[in-house]
Length: 118
Image (cartoon, rainbow, N blue to C red; front, side, top):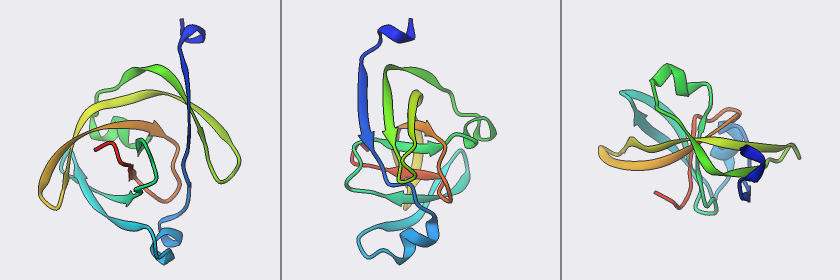
C-alpha cells in the first residue's frame, strides 16, 4: 500500500533550457536514450536524475514503482510526489554508455536532468 512507504524529499530547480544556458554554473548538453537525442541538464547539486514523463511511452522505457515516495519541490513552489522510476536506463553521453535510474517528472524545457547518481 502506497501510504505505508517511506517518504523522501529532494529539491530540484525547474527551469527552461534557455535559462540554464545563460547560467554560468550549469551545463546543458545532449544525451541519447533509445536512439533519440535529448536535451540534458547536468546538475551536480541534484542527488537524483530525472526524465520528462512524456518521453517514457515514446521511448518505450520500462518503469517500476519506487520503494519510497519522493517529494520534489520545484521553483514554482509546487510539491510533486514522484513514485515511478526507469531503473537502470541505458543512456549515452559523449558515446559512453551509463545506466541511470531516471525518476519520471513533469519537467519544463528539458528532457533529462542528470544528478550525481550516475
